[in-house]
Length: 214
Image (cartoon, rainbow, N blue to C red; front, top):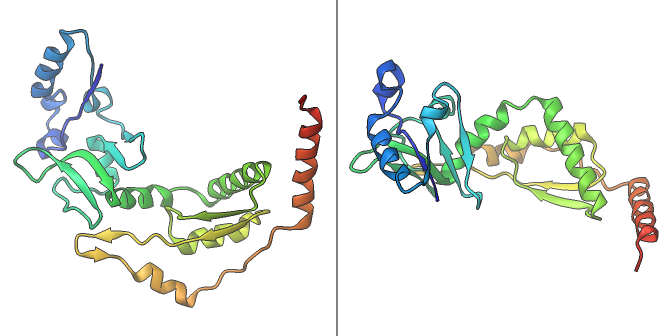
């Protein structure tokens, strides 16, 4: 069995070099290793580098202390509507695990750091893969702001239809609606799937079909 022990983001942990290795977690790791279990302590492995682990079901993140700082998550940040932070027992300090709508704030910060060129390249790669599977339309909830995503879609000039839906983030008191309200005043040109691209991928499928031995 594998165990991952997470050093909670305590204030003095950031500034006191002597606390680089959390003594309590080292004791726990020592006990767990005796039965030949695999044990790792997240901050001990990469104390100076941000780490973000994604839960297998996509609903949660595990962050180390450095990542929490860079993603602007306070150690006692309140839970947003629809999401939650795991806490150190008997305290308000976040342990490093967050769930559901609590993911959207760090996701937005990460998406905002992506250069336009990289985003357009990934959009075109996604569209190309979709067409190879015969998909000509997609529905996407982008992590970045809907206005920027729509502008990038126009620049990418994709051969498929994309319906972009604004996924409004939440705070402790409710939903953040300003971004959705801005859509009332913004218009982005729509583009239909062109016939040449459909023919291109139909020819591809027919060619692959002829190679298949039934």
